[in-house]
Amino acid sequence: MLSVKGIYEEGKIKLLEKIKSQNRSKVIITFIDDPDTSEEERLRVFSSDGGALTFWNSEAENIYQDYLPKKKK
Image (cartoon, rainbow, N blue to C red; front, side, top):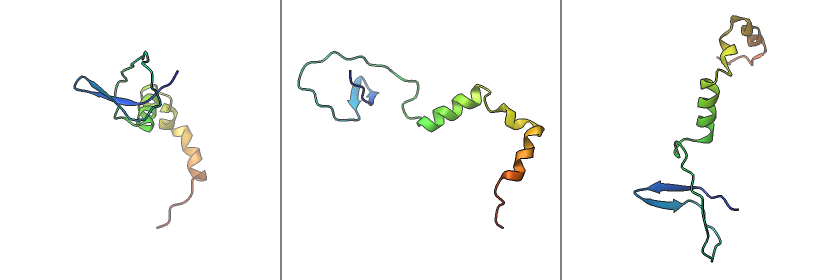
């Protein structure tokens, strides 16, 4: 099995990678929600929507500010 990235536009699929295939092949095409969103952006949205980082809003977490590097002025 081989997976490659591509773009679907106006009824056509354009592969973003070259493949070595000389035979007729069956394919499975999966449409993802937003092909233009970077992996980092999807991770950021996932973590913020899931509440995984809400602990940063707690005043008790401010104790870690002492360990951050000081900014030069």
